[in-house]
Length: 88
Ligand SMILES: [Zn+2]
Image (cartoon, rainbow, N blue to C red; front, side, top):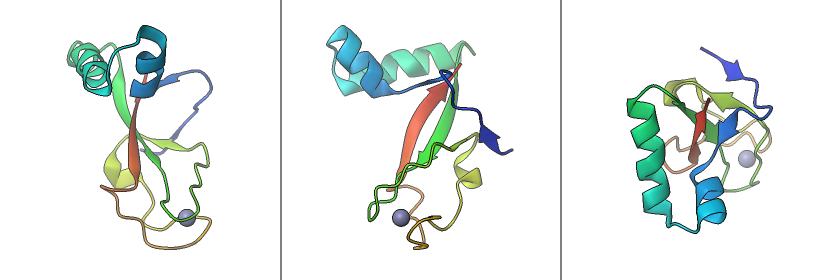
């Protein structure tokens, strides 16, 4: 389980917020509704709180996210420093 090609196959809750003017909770409800129906899958992206590096890699599972930031090499808190995204 590795890296997913991110090119236009990833959607963020924030995309729905800006497009439809809904709040972030509603956006996640919609995305989880679609996920329940296997239209999209959840994916994870590292977001180092120190260097803010998002290197474009998206992972299938939270366990696939690397333990250390590739840029600042600090150990990543996988709950606090991981963004949930969805792939379709
Ligand atoms: Zn970092």
